[in-house]
Image (tube, rainbow, N blue to C red):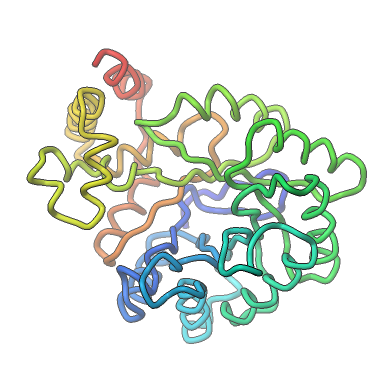
Length: 319
């Protein structure tokens, strides 16, 4: 297994790459999902990130929970619960009365996640989205009870403003549990906002960071380079609008150069950059085949030089 890193002060030690579970039960059926999970563990990974809302956006999946259900079946069939860490989230809308971070809803939602995951505890339970209608203390009070009951081991935050994150950290000094991780959008294309707004907070507090969109929806794999390439997948249209521009093209050129020097792939370089970035514990990335996941896990063995990092970060600026 790769060298483990502690996630904040949680006591949870994870490999430098977290497997994203958003594809399970959606673009990866159950059989494929099992193969992907097997490949991830075989490649040295030990933490899987999902959410109760995955994959509510798919027609016929209105209730969500598909990803958690697949992971739960895999855990049970493979007997892996004791050596794999499960991260899931609460707060996104599953229905008119199933959303937000009220104490009552959090305590109801965790029971549903535990049942789908076929486990007695969740290693990292995350506020998927801040509920600004409530004081930051309300979900923390719910989490305090769940921690005491042993149903969760640590808590994290995702999609919080810097102000609300800091307020929650301040509240934790008064006897409430502390968010030990932050899950922001952060990658080689989009890194300025996190580094400006969130990095000072996480470095001062010592909480861990497990960013999503580490591969910029697949753009940083290098497979989307022209309008024709955008037809390769259902995600292509959105990718093209956001990333296929002068900045994106310059970044792909730099990725090509660094990947060539290390006999690596563009995706491996993009993830290795994240793994070495200040404040980052482990990026989250997903794959829809065992081969893709094996490629991603190999990024944990790639060490970029200072010159590599400079080239990657200055290319988009120059564009």
